[in-house]
Image (cartoon, rainbow, N blue to C red; front, side):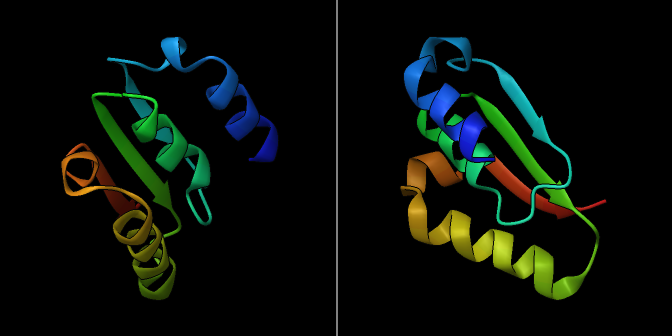
Length: 77
């Protein structure tokens, strides 16, 4: 996740306007970074445990603007 976040930070043009799916996201930091880089749609997913999905959603809500939040969805799979 740290390497991917560094990559997104250094190359946001690779994510701008793209659709991103993160599987096994945990806290979802790469998805959040992709959204901040301008991805048009992001789905951040992990095991469908209620607490895990709530934690991903909490991170999305606390780290992204309202506009960015409109482009990202946290779901269990």
